[in-house]
Length: 334
Image (cartoon, rainbow, N blue to C red):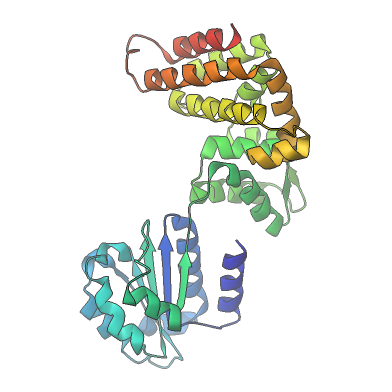
């Protein structure tokens, strides 16, 4: 995010590059930076003649070069945005001749999503010399809660660790989807609000009591009644609580417990750092490790691999989601 902040600051300060290569697996920042350039470089009167959007599947490299070499009309710059530039992957290297001598009054923006250019080839090296290359990398699951916290902090909000974890578990790693939900909360809640699980439940529809986070906690504490209530809710609402995701989250949870058992230093700070979790949750993992010895955790991890196959319909066609989860809990608690 620090790199993104610097790019945004430079664009707003009108420190433009002649070429922007925005590439990588995470489309969220590619879209945001491209949209900012489309908004900031030209005023509304200038955009009609000097800003164009082309799509990789509909345009050739020669056509892109032709547009890029034009002079702006009654403006300092023209902006040429190539969306879905990854569709030009077979021919994009031919752009290198233009990159070596770019038109100073043109800002060429290449949105190269879900892929990266080969860094060994000339095009990448030449763009690095004269323009800006941004590699938008996918965030890991464990990085999402902190990302949510930082985004909200920049907008004047805070969020409790549990609320951030609820959003992360329900929405996954899709930053665009998460951003949309955060925007909804910011419309509803005044600045300075600390966002809580109650806010998430009321405004986004994620249950604060019946979710994967609470299931992990109940299992870790060996609170069987609560765990069975949660899986009953999951079974009654399968569309909102996909079995595959629940099994996946439990597998990750017990894999971390297995890692914890192997640590020499089991202090909260050490556990949080080793497991890459918020320190707020370290105590829950330490409690769970006392309730589940290493041998039991190893058995549960093996069981979860078996149930992962079942969750995908192999060997369990006649079983409902509720039946599979109940059977899983029996094996975990036995």
